[in-house]
Length: 341
Ligand code: WQD
Image (tube, rainbow, N blue to C red; front, side, top):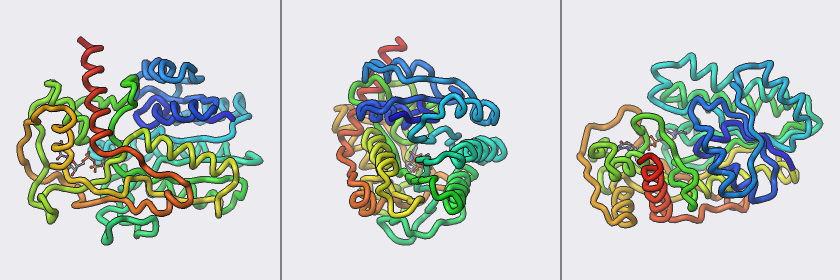
């Protein structure tokens, strides 16, 4: 079985390539390396012993996409990660986010819709729910007006796939709505590589603890939660990667009830910012320096998944604990700094 993974050198993409190879898939990666490092290919290869095929080009180049599918007409599936994903940056540069995240999706689907059978997994996000009224959040929760162009590209992307599947019965697709992916492969050969100052909580914690960032700012402790800090569903990236493999196998083996489905992919458990800090301190044995700062615009109070559908339909469940995921993140950070010193 041969699978295209776009954005396969990225954080979630690279971990998914490893799990696909572990399941015996042949993997070809397309990545323009705008937000990823080609060295990640070595990391994947050192884990699995198999070097994925790799082509470096921008999916916004429609002719390159066409040419790729002409040369690879034996694909059994496509997992589409390649997209810009920084919420704040998307507010500053909406057009580049719409062009990069929407055009590339359209070009891929234009190639797939001509196939006799096509299996497509889309990287979506719990951000489509905004602040859900009811917790935990199920797949039927209302989709809220996006709080950022990034979030809007995920909503629009899902609608484009849904509408295309409606008129192409041999196109089978699943959108996976991720909650908060964290951690790194247990080998510490691959992990999260934020560019610049990390916007996300966990990479900022590990960079602060290792000494390349100042103290962590906790964005608000006056929310209506037990300890006053926001709650999220932090899912170990390897568990998330495995969800992609079972979702793809569901499509290839034609186990889906319809040719377009959506699944929430989380642990089903919410953790507050302070609980994440306490988890880090437990696994690292280090005291984390932090201060309470103002709330961050756009943050929802709480979001964690109702994972019943993924557990039941995909036969998939997140296995790692928060401590396990945080331990892997810390080990990765320490290994990274060893490499760069
Ligand atoms: C988590 C919590 C912050 C940094 C975003 C995107 C989402 C997905 C995952 C791509 C919040 C708090 C954070 C810091 C803090 N990305 N925090 N100090 O915002 O839930 O989700 O990343 O798909 O689409 O929206 O994740 O890690 O940024 O924040 O206090 O320095 O940590 O306020 O409560 P978020 P996050």
